[in-house]
Structures are given as structure tokens and as C-alpha cells.
Length: 282
Image (cartoon, rainbow, N blue to C red; front, side):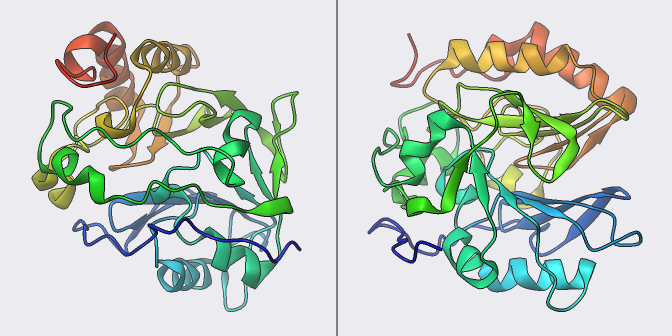
């Protein structure tokens, strides 16, 4: 293990949370969503069958204890995943990653276009506080933006679309919110881990984030830099006709509710998701 890992100089605890923080939802027997303040991590694996599971994303800064407790509550004391899959590298998806890798010494995987942001080579564009939205957009400049450096501890996802340690899933490139964002899809039951390609809460508005008011939306506006690609990524996922979706922010959606809302988002993306103003509009 490469021990020369570090967070950016601006990594810090962010005092933003929701009523769902610290709670989990068993979406399917082997698909478990756990909310860390304002973001979801996912555990893929059935604790009733075996202890083999994979962790998707790594929560908010300073959340390692919360994540560790959640995993032990679900899979037992001293449990650890076979791998960590990153949907992308924004601060709220890698916040506890270094501590978890140091503790578990497990492989981490991400899309090749995301690797520079995970190895200290490139920095994401600054969050856009001017974008149309509420208080979360306004406070976004305080969010950590310096790149994390995982050194040699991050690996490129296989080019053939397979997901290490999750043979039934395939990864789907869904850029727009970040260059190398991926979603994960399982054909047999059409289960989708959508990352921030679309979410089920208006992430720009603090009240809705705090109360987790359920509403389909596009990716969080303050960190989305390519709206054309973001729209195309939503359209791409809709073509898989998912039966259940876990998103990076908000509550799961299933069956008819998901189908109707995803179709609505595809048809009205510019009205629902795309902001009327902001520095990344073209």
C-alpha cells in the first residue's frame, strides 16, 4: 500500500446534514443505501448470504467513524469490503477514503478520466456560487475542492465495462457532473446506482436537503460543469429502463415512480435540471 496519501489542504468537516443522516435503507437484499450527512454511500452484498460486499463511494470529510459503524451494523464487527468503487472524486464522495484504505488495505477503482483528480494532478473547477439555486449553492465555495491524492492506491476500472468484485454489474460512463463519473447497472433486476447523474432531491436548496424532500433532479448544479454531457448521461441511463435507482443524494426510487420521474426528467431536462444562469452554461 502506498502510504503517501493525503487530502487537499482545504479538506474539513462541513456542517451540513439532513434528517436521513446516519440511517440506512435496504433497497434490495443486497443493495443498501446509507446516508452520511447529505450524501449516500452504497453497500452491495447480501449479509444473510455471505460477508462479500463492495462499498460504493466514501462519504463526507471526517465521516470515517460513521461509515465504519454502518458497515459493522450491516455485516458484522471487523467486516470490510472487497473493494471500493468510486463513482467520481468530488469531496462528498471521497471524504473518508484515505482512512478507510489505510484501515482495510483494499483496492479502489475509478474511471480513467477521474484518476487525475484522485492522484493530486488536477483540481476540479471551483464550485459555482453564482449558479441558480438556493443556500447550498451559495455556500458551495466553502466546500473542499483541492484534489485528494491516493498515490498508487487507485486503479482504473476495466475498459470492458466490468466492475471488479461485482460480476453482475457493469459500469456506465456518465460525464457532465464530473469528467469520469460512472453509474453502475445490473441487468438481471435492472438495479441502478446512478451516482450524481441524476438525484432525488433538489441538492441546491438547503431546506430540501435537510428534509430530504423527494423530487427528481439533475446533478447538483454548483459542481456541474458540462450541461450538454449531463443531459446526454441522463438520457443514456433512461434507456436501460431501471426498476430501482439509488442516487448520490436523496431517497431511492423504484418501479412506476422511477419510470415516470426519469421520463419526466429526460423530457424536461432543461426546465428541471439545467439552471437559468451560472458560469458553466454555454
